[in-house]
Structure formats: C-alpha cells, structure tokens
Image (tube, rainbow, N blue to C red; front, side):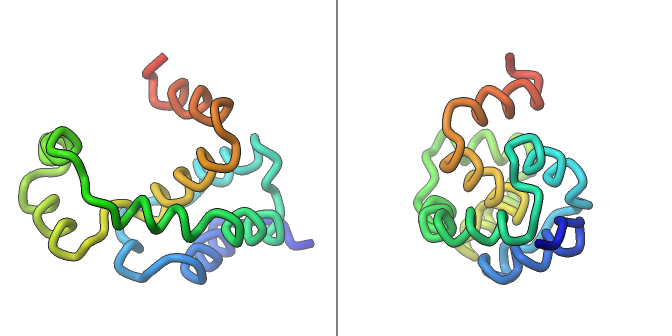
Length: 121
C-alpha cells in the first residue's frame, strides 16, 4: 500500500480523467490534505474512490452549464477562458474533478468541509 504523494496523485488522476482536464496550477498539496482528512491515504484508496465515482464525475463535467454558472465563471476566469472551456466541452480541472468525486463519495460532511475551506461558512 503506497502512500499518496503529489506526483502519484497526479498520475492516478491522469489514468481516470481526460488530458484536456489537466490544466491549472495545483501542486496537489491541498488536495492531499483533504483526501487524508477523509481517510484516503494510499494510492489504492484513491484508485478505489475513482473506480467508483469517475464516470459520474465525468458526466457532471460534460453536462451543460447553467447561464448563472457561466456568468459566474466569466466573472472569475474571464470570457475567453470560459468560451474555450465550453468549446472543448470541459469545465473542471483535475483538482475540481477530484473534489466532485469526494463530494459524491462523502456527501454532506465533505460539503461542510469544503465550505469551511473556501470561507463560505
């Protein structure tokens, strides 16, 4: 049972998600902490989570975004970035896809955790 590292986490995400979602600047340290806080500490743990959740996660990534979501993203990232992501039919980075998987797996406790992380609560 190999412990997760930023490099192994990124490698496993590459196995489950399309290369077009491998954008952004994460060093995966924050994601490793989150995974560990929810008991996902080994490569096998992460593979099991993604085996269970990756199809649903990709379905969410590929689903149409609402006008409100698009406006918010344009405000945060700019219209050009959002237009590119819509053309390429990708929305979330690897970090975002991972966090969707965690929300699907851990439900309300993870939602509260992420709201606290983001300063929403």
